[in-house]
Image 1 (cartoon, helix red, strand yellow):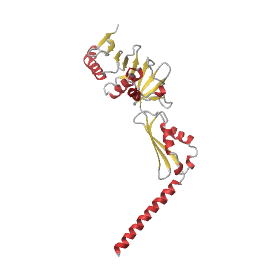
Image 2: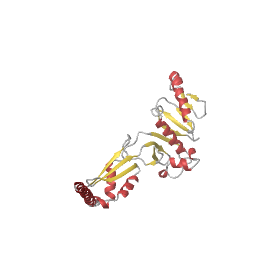
Image 3: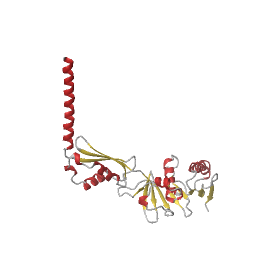
Image 4: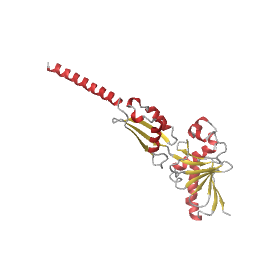
Length: 265
């Protein structure tokens, strides 16, 4: 008998818990939104877009959001709005227990600032177009020169990763070569502190300008970058350290297994 009453009490307790959860859920769904909060993870980069700017976008499009019940909030729409911002890489949107909308943003990471004859823009670390931010200029690699040659489509549609998959000729495009070289330099512990400028000459060859010394390094294309940079480091360590950094005006690495140095006139 005691066991029977015990089982009945357990069932009643379970039913009570379910009822409380259902009531609480219904109550929460009918509660009006109190506030919109935005946090931004900059991934160690400078600020391209602020939390307040993103919050302003939401409040501008959803002007009555703080009077809407939780059940009527368009979370998918807010997330789409955030991801449409050119400086946002990823966004998650949720509603807290206290009926606040919480938006967590990951900012995109600019890799290289590109200057063409008509415009300037960033490519991010995934090779996608980014407009220049009005908040702050980024300390990234600069690329200029004859980059308009073979330029595929409009800059705002650029996605180098997708282009490399869809077009077998993509690696010959100047903008793609710039991205691949910038990505290599940014990832190389030796190259990153040495170089901050890429130049595309009229022959379509990539050149890099070192921070130290007064010479230009001709890379050519983006093939065999590991070998080219290892040769360059060897030249710097065993050659320039002895004869000086200002004796040569050009270091040409475009040909495999050889380095051609041009002395200053």
